[in-house]
Length: 268
Image (tube, rainbow, N blue to C red; front, side, top):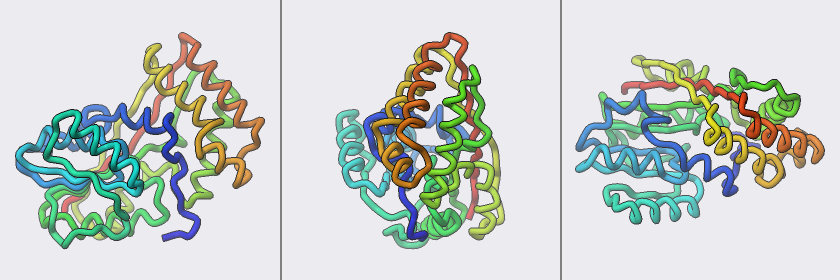
């Protein structure tokens, strides 16, 4: 694991708020046909747990374990599951490079927006492959930030993209991971890999407010801001420019933003 590896986005409220929007339908639809009753699932990098809980509801009487590097986030996700009355899910802190499970344990091992943040995604995929059963599925979906597109063409959003790409790489990540998933899976030892793509698109008033307002906060108040200044990826003035641009984008009725993602279903 790269010594410089760290999570670019952190766990600021503005980050967790956007992550909590995620469900199977909007973030793992490619996997949905395989989420059948009775399967055993490991969700690597489960975050606030909304995808994980959705998986659990679909696979009863099967069960799912959500694993995340942050113990605090796991506690919050556990509370959400219990408050939602979902009892066939557990959340545990763990390390994606060293999964604490025997070989051939799970029917499905899933990771959403995880591989872009790790220094050695092939090693993580090998570990996911180890704990999935023969014939089981390793599923992953990651964004391709460099292929994102938006309107209006605000200079502050160009600054945001430049800073994000620079910071993610300084943290040993790959912000365009989605386009490499198939290649990484093959390098990890998979010979049967189905690769697809899907897109998030934010254009309605509510969607623009949800996405853009969160980034306006992240740009100046989250670990993204702290790390950007620390690494020299951005100045305070540039971060303020980014925040202002996102606020302007939210308020523009013409606003449109699209993020393409790569996806893989890899069989052991």
